[in-house]
Length: 104
Image (cartoon, rainbow, N blue to C red; front, side):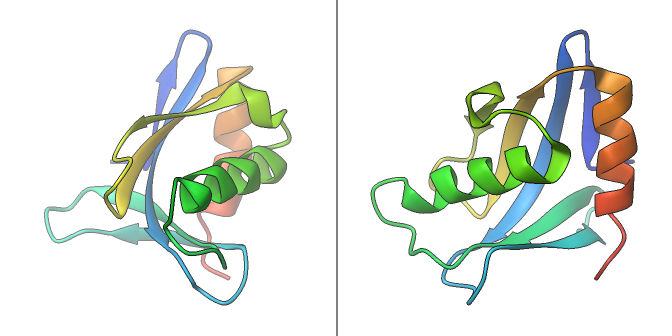
Protein backbone atom coordinates (compact mmCIF):
# COMPACT_ATOMS: atom_id res chain seq x y z
CA UNK A 1 0.00 0.00 0.00
CA UNK A 2 1.46 3.35 -1.03
CA UNK A 3 1.79 6.30 1.36
CA UNK A 4 -0.49 8.35 -0.92
CA UNK A 5 -4.07 7.95 -2.07
CA UNK A 6 -5.32 9.46 -5.32
CA UNK A 7 -8.29 11.82 -5.14
CA UNK A 8 -10.26 13.52 -7.90
CA UNK A 9 -8.49 16.85 -7.35
CA UNK A 10 -5.16 15.73 -5.86
CA UNK A 11 -3.74 13.22 -3.39
CA UNK A 12 -3.71 12.47 0.32
CA UNK A 13 -0.29 11.72 1.80
CA UNK A 14 0.39 9.89 5.07
CA UNK A 15 3.52 11.18 6.79
CA UNK A 16 5.48 10.53 9.97
CA UNK A 17 6.94 13.77 11.25
CA UNK A 18 10.06 14.21 13.33
CA UNK A 19 10.00 17.74 14.77
CA UNK A 20 13.29 19.31 15.90
CA UNK A 21 14.96 16.99 13.38
CA UNK A 22 17.90 19.31 12.67
CA UNK A 23 16.88 20.18 9.11
CA UNK A 24 13.87 20.28 6.80
CA UNK A 25 14.04 17.10 4.71
CA UNK A 26 11.98 14.31 3.16
CA UNK A 27 13.66 11.06 4.20
CA UNK A 28 11.73 8.65 1.98
CA UNK A 29 9.08 6.01 2.47
CA UNK A 30 8.96 3.55 5.33
CA UNK A 31 6.66 0.73 6.40
CA UNK A 32 4.85 0.74 9.74
CA UNK A 33 4.38 -2.38 11.85
CA UNK A 34 0.87 -2.84 10.42
CA UNK A 35 2.30 -2.96 6.88
CA UNK A 36 1.04 0.45 5.78
CA UNK A 37 3.48 2.93 4.28
CA UNK A 38 4.26 6.49 5.33
CA UNK A 39 6.56 9.23 4.07
CA UNK A 40 9.17 10.18 6.67
CA UNK A 41 9.67 13.92 7.05
CA UNK A 42 11.83 15.88 9.47
CA UNK A 43 11.56 19.57 10.22
CA UNK A 44 13.80 21.73 12.38
CA UNK A 45 11.03 23.58 14.28
CA UNK A 46 9.49 22.43 17.55
CA UNK A 47 5.90 21.18 17.65
CA UNK A 48 4.53 24.32 19.28
CA UNK A 49 1.41 26.20 18.20
CA UNK A 50 1.23 24.32 14.88
CA UNK A 51 4.67 25.48 13.74
CA UNK A 52 5.84 21.95 12.85
CA UNK A 53 2.61 21.25 10.91
CA UNK A 54 3.06 24.48 8.94
CA UNK A 55 6.70 23.59 8.22
CA UNK A 56 5.68 20.14 6.97
CA UNK A 57 3.02 21.67 4.73
CA UNK A 58 5.56 24.12 3.26
CA UNK A 59 8.09 21.33 2.72
CA UNK A 60 5.52 19.09 1.03
CA UNK A 61 4.44 21.97 -1.21
CA UNK A 62 8.02 22.73 -2.24
CA UNK A 63 8.81 19.05 -2.77
CA UNK A 64 5.91 18.36 -5.14
CA UNK A 65 5.84 21.80 -6.75
CA UNK A 66 2.51 23.22 -5.62
CA UNK A 67 1.67 26.42 -3.78
CA UNK A 68 1.63 26.13 0.03
CA UNK A 69 -2.06 27.12 -0.07
CA UNK A 70 -2.74 23.84 -1.93
CA UNK A 71 -1.59 21.74 1.06
CA UNK A 72 -3.92 21.19 4.02
CA UNK A 73 -3.67 19.07 7.14
CA UNK A 74 -6.50 16.51 7.16
CA UNK A 75 -5.75 14.59 10.36
CA UNK A 76 -3.15 14.15 13.07
CA UNK A 77 -2.65 17.76 14.19
CA UNK A 78 -1.02 16.68 17.47
CA UNK A 79 0.29 13.24 16.41
CA UNK A 80 3.46 12.16 14.65
CA UNK A 81 1.40 10.35 12.00
CA UNK A 82 -0.47 12.89 9.89
CA UNK A 83 -2.44 13.01 6.68
CA UNK A 84 -2.08 15.96 4.30
CA UNK A 85 -4.18 16.73 1.22
CA UNK A 86 -2.33 18.15 -1.78
CA UNK A 87 -4.43 19.73 -4.52
CA UNK A 88 -3.32 19.44 -8.12
CA UNK A 89 -3.08 16.94 -10.96
CA UNK A 90 -3.19 13.51 -9.26
CA UNK A 91 -1.00 11.79 -11.88
CA UNK A 92 1.72 14.44 -11.69
CA UNK A 93 1.63 14.51 -7.88
CA UNK A 94 1.85 10.70 -7.69
CA UNK A 95 4.85 10.65 -10.05
CA UNK A 96 6.65 13.22 -7.91
CA UNK A 97 5.76 11.42 -4.68
CA UNK A 98 7.05 8.16 -6.12
CA UNK A 99 10.47 9.80 -6.58
CA UNK A 100 10.29 11.26 -3.05
CA UNK A 101 9.58 7.84 -1.59
CA UNK A 102 13.08 6.64 -2.34
CA UNK A 103 15.15 6.95 0.85
CA UNK A 104 17.95 9.52 0.70
